[in-house]
Length: 155
Ligand code: CA2
Image (tube, rainbow, N blue to C red; front, side, top):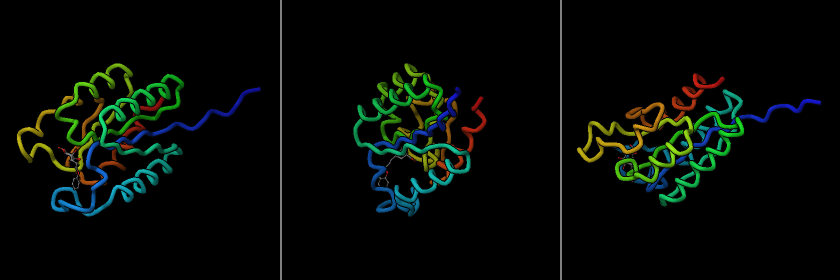
């Protein structure tokens, strides 16, 4: 007897301070809250029949652990992909770079704002060399666009 395949999961990871979304700096990040972003992601996943695992952490190690978890899903053929907004860790974290390289998860690096139109320290990303795709400047709608884009990487 064959068992029905489990649905694939999209892991959306949000780094430090993104829990403050919608409460400050609306000119840079818009007025949507992180709960609104989760809702957008849930709708996008529903379009593709995928399960959503949506998380935010202010702690670098939690994000590393979440990427390792995604790697285990990937090994079981149950990962559609990872969308990572690492926040300020984008510009500092060799640990996240190593986690992405070490797990080889298909990952979209995402930023709400156009980081290249901002301060010079935001122009460098430790994550980009290990990401399959990089998106910035589309506002929170970028999350849904990134999830839709994962469709192109499925077998
Ligand atoms: O544009 C993005 O999505 C960023 O990843 C956001 C990070 C920033 O450090 C990156 O350079 C670009 C900051 C996230 C903090 O989000 C806040 C939102 C509202 C109020 C305060 C912080």
